Length: 365
Length: 154
Image (cartoon, rainbow over all chains, first blue to last red; front, side, top):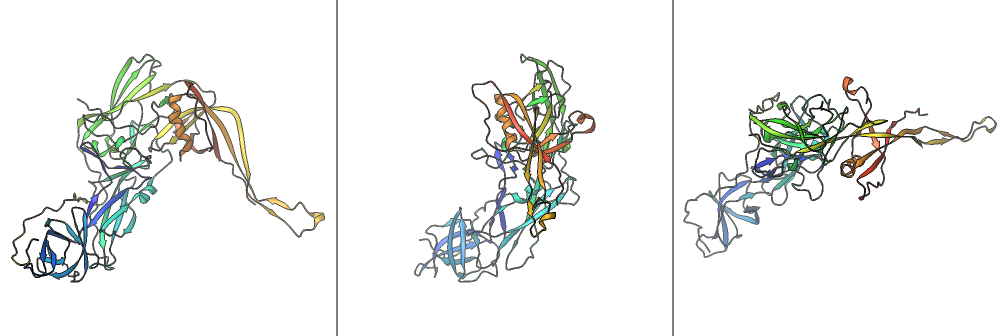
C-alpha cells in the first residue's frame, strides 16, 4: 500500500512558487493510491504460447500483497488512463489479467479496491498559533474515487483561525498578523480493513503551506492562489507582487493610523528586505528617498507595513515598495516539538525499468 | 543591486482638517485592512425595533394596566458620515459596503498615546449610487450602525 501526493495547493510564478491560498475558498491536496507498482504491461496469451485466450501480463515491483486474490477486479492506471480488469492467475513476478492492451506499456500502478475494504485517508490539519507552535486544528477522513484518487479540502479547518478584528498597534515598521494569514501543514495515513494501525507521516516545519484571510473573485488569475500578491526574488518578473489594498492610490490621513498589508512570503526567506519610500511634492518632484530594513521575524506570515511618517508639509505623495537587500540566513521557525523531517516527497513518476526476459507468457500480438 | 519585489504603490498624503472626524478601518476581500477618514454629517439617527410583546388575558378589568406589554426593544444609534473623494478612490471605498469587519476608531484624539481602540460597527445595507462618471470628485456617504443600546428584558 502506498499513497502519493499528486497535487498541492501551490502555483508557479515563473520559476518560483506561491503556496499562499485564499482561505475562504477550497484549499485542496490530491492523493493517488498506488497499491502495487507495475513495471511493464505486456499483451500475452493465457497459455503463454499464443494458442489460447488473449490476456495481459502485469509485471509488478516488490512483493505481491497477500490480500490480492485470483478472481478479484483490479484497476490498472498508466499515463493517466484507467483500465479495469480481473486477475486470472498470480505468478511470482507478474499477474495474468484479462486482456486490456494491444501493445506493451511501461510503468503505472494498480489500485486494489477489492483487496482492501473500507479504504480511506485520514488527514490531520495543523495550524500555527501565536507562539509559533503547531497546533492540531482538525482531522478528516476522505474516501477515494473510482480511480483511487483522494481529494482533501482543508479550507474549513483553516478558516477557523481567521481573526477579523484589527489588532495591529501601528507602532512598528512591519509585523506579522497571524489572524490575517499564517502557515499550515498536514499529515496523513491510510486506513483500510477497519484497522487504524498505520502511523501518520511526519509533520514538517520546512515545507509549509500558507493561507490568507481573503477571497478571490471569479475569473481572477491563479484561481484561489494569492500568487499575484506573493513577492519573489526575480528580476524578470514584470508584474511585481501587489500590496493587498483595493485602492489604486491609498490615502494616508496625517495623524491617523495607516498600514498596508503585504505577504512576507517564504520566497524571501534568505534575503533581507527593505521598505523604500520616495516622497514627492505637488509637482511630482522627488523630495527624499529612504530605506528601512524590515523585521525578518515576521517572515512567512501576512504582514502590515507602516509608512515612515513625520513628513514635511510639502510632501503630497509617497511612492512605497519593497526591495531586496543583503543575503541572510533563514532559520526555520523553532517549534516546541521536534518535527525535523520533510513531509512531502515530490511525486516521482515511476521510471520504467528493463525487465528480465521471461520465456513463458511473453508473446506480442 | 537591490531587486524590486513589489509594485510601486503611490500613497496620497491628506492633511485636511475634518470638522467631526470619524475614522474607519475595514477588511477588504484580499485580506488587507483599509483606512479612511470620514466627516460626520450633523444628523444623528436612532433606529428602534420591537423585541417582542406579550398579551395578558383573564384579568380584572377595573384594576388592569392594559393587556399588551413589551418584552424589550432593540435600539442602536446610527451616524451618517461622508467624504468628498476622487472617483478613483470610490473604487476602493466601495469595499467598505460589503466588508465583514468594519471598525471605528473610538479614541480619535488619544490613540497615539494610549493605543488605538476600535469599535465594531456595521454599515447599513442597500443599493448605492456610487458616483457620476462625469464628475471628478463625488460625495461618498454611508450610514454606520453603532453597537446596540443595551436594554432590560422583562
